Image 1 (tube, helix red, strand yellow):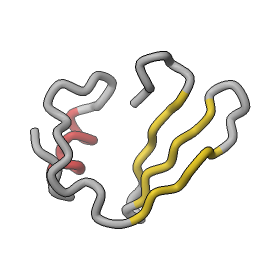
Image 2: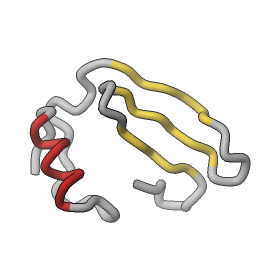
Image 3: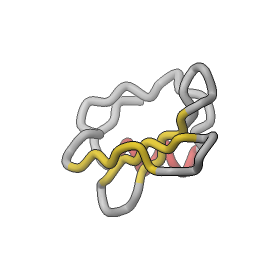
Image 4: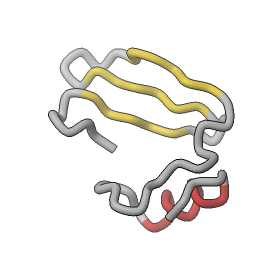
Length: 63
């Protein structure tokens, strides 16, 4: 998922981490760990495949 300005990419891993990436440099800005998906509302998020939505839902996100 990209930020509204297209400068940051958010990725989620099977290790239950979320990484924020700087698009211009390709560097990881920050790694977030824990149960951050619990209660996350992804209903209207662009760029998520059905498979990714299903995975996030399994981790506790709201669809």
